[in-house]
Image (spheres, rainbow, N blue to C red):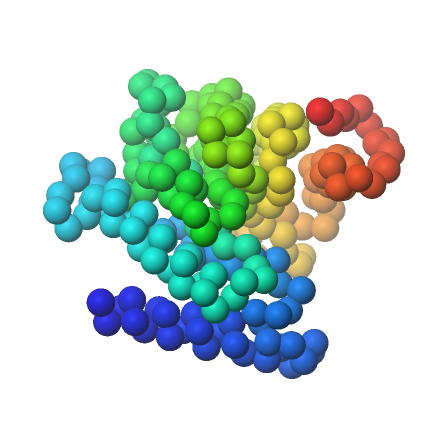
Length: 237
């Protein structure tokens, strides 16, 4: 309970802070896209079997309480969960990622009244995928399907990353799948200056952008009603 009080105090302080550049309080500042409840919220131990102290209902209830609190103090911005997409059961019994939750019920969390859009992350190497293209595209498709058709909400790919030796084959497949499945936003992990070390093997530098990203940023702009010209072969639904 004390942790919740502290978190709410932190939230209230943050959204009422005045942006020194725009002169507006964060709650009124249009340069802020949305609020995220946490980065990859988890309830560790849930995968060993639900127990009274750590069930999937714990995070869902917490997200409901905190998203409601944010909306009470800031009616101008969207709120999302920041989760990875764990807890989407019934998709593929042979792929362990769909039986993994770490305390999350993806659909229940995204369905909350004050959650405006869903988020997922995708790390094929960390999750032990054997076929990066097939399993990764399936992950992209299945999450979009439930969010778009069942909940009728937007979905954003907040993070996805691959080591350099996998990108040529896999990145185009992932990006095209996200375009085909009408993802409302696509963000990769991560872009850095040339002097910044590649600590996790997922870092993209300026020289990589034109190879892996440029064509798909044009497609996303096209969804916003802007006319784009693709130099390579690309398509949008």
